[in-house]
Image (cartoon, rainbow over all chains, first blue to last red; front, top):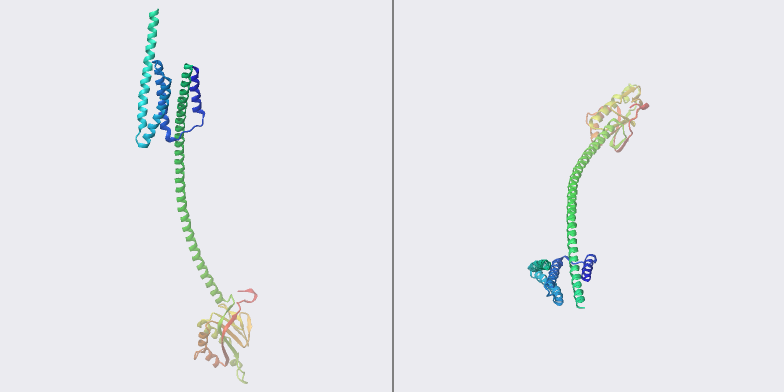
Length: 121
Length: 234
């Protein structure tokens, strides 16, 4: 359990303290990448709770989502259409959806646990 | 093994996502900071522009002042030029007046008239054969009227205050005793003076009729010494 948390901390540390800079023009790509990463993470959490978690799906989904979002934003910039807004919208909807599912599953498990406890008592 | 592999994958994904999130966070911070610096920069630019405008206004007023001062200077210069011409005229007048009063030596063309006693004839009144003061006065009056600028008797300059007095056989001019022959030199247009003296029935004829030898000579250059009275009186 400590290994993923350590990875998260190392990532944050690297992001904060390395002198890695992105030009102004690519700031929209970065924001979309952030959204894609969060979406995939929550998707993974949901899949884990639903017991349908697959590492390969998770891993490929994570990177392809980021790459796809960045590609979409790139295309939008070059076509003159704000396509990255579509990505933001889609990821945002999915993020809320996933979080809602997670909440529901957690609530269900909580209540079912309480019921079980009650029933056992 | 399987669980550990999934953990590794999860940690990798979390690492990447954490990295991205942190980077985004930092980037946003930097941007806002840059915006702030932009704001302060803008304010600074505004202040500098204000300063430039102020300086330009000051410069403009200074330029106007400079123009005013230059105008004043031009006026002063003109005034000085006027004064200088006035001074020049005054100095010219002064020179002329000094020449008339005999305070300065003068050089120029003029006429020289020499009066001499004629040969004395035995038995006659000797008074009829010598040059008298009135002859000299007459001659000098004629010369002055004709426009002589400076006159000297035997090299002794006379002015408006000079006196000519008869003392027996000699003549005293301003305390300076002269005797015959009297050379009267007059500065002026020699032609005019000559004609005035030689006029028929004029001075020369009258002098000749009074038995005086008259010799008139035109000269190109006459040097007259300035008038100095004895004992330093002016």
